Length: 294
Image (cartoon, rainbow, N blue to C red):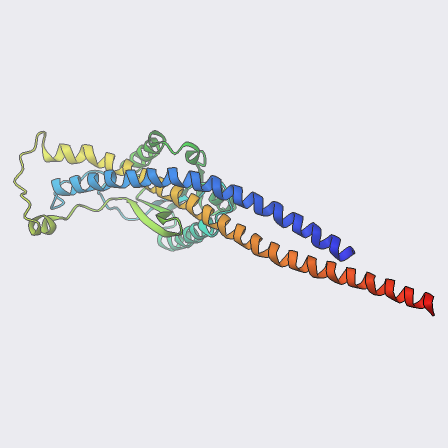
């Protein structure tokens, strides 16, 4: 009977876990739909903005302060994870990639250089705070609202530091959203940006490049590049959020399925143990009855 009690306790525990994971899956599904709609709505805008800048500056003639490539001395690595766990390998993959990039830049930067890391997400902050060989800045609160205004303010501060030559390169490590079942681990260069070179594409499409610009082409490009950078960083944050909720929804679905299978096995074990206990009791009763007859 002690075995039956143990199995009943396990059944109750697994059943409670199943209810929790099922509820978390439903919550993640609702958040995932909102995040998915946000990134799907953002991508055409960001893509069109990039295309406009590229069409205006087909030969890369206009250089802004954000195009300038300098020898590496100070590098900023932006690591985007999540504030919560239970989302499979979503966070561990980013942290592993970020660690690899940190080790790479430690061999590339001069002795007087500095590797700065901006952690967006508590999971990466908890891991990177232990390192003493980097200058760590934490901005976990950005994910709570993930508004364009907050991301644009962060992008402006990064662009200002780059234009003042305090930073020579900016990279972003994050999960790019593909679908609810898969994410693409990406390491994208944010600054300096590559000059547009779409002359061949424009000519192949028969597009005309003899536009009349008002104001000048230089003014248009210099005003639109910061907009492009803000939207690019915002798109990366939205990509990470959609990937997070998709990964958590998938993880909770797998956990619920595993709990369901485990419950089946436990109930089968319980029934077998109960049947064995009843059989033993019957045998004892019959044996006692036969002993009394004798």
